[in-house]
Length: 74
Image 1 (spheres, rainbow, N blue to C red):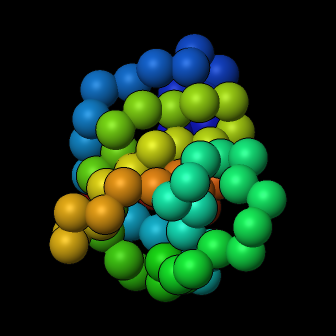
Image 2 (cartoon, rainbow, N blue to C red):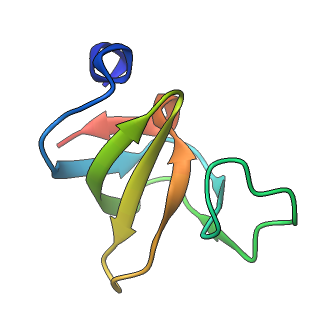
């Protein structure tokens, strides 16, 4: 994924969360505390990469942002 972040775009695909991370549903620059956490081993669908963050969709169809560095392609 690191190479994908440099280009700023990638096709949607599945990824696994590598470590527990706050799930920023309001955007990558969300200043309020995250209301939920994605956990190591969770699977997400990557929608797009924006700088150091990826917009992802969880298995229960919630969309939000996590650092691209915590994602591993599946």
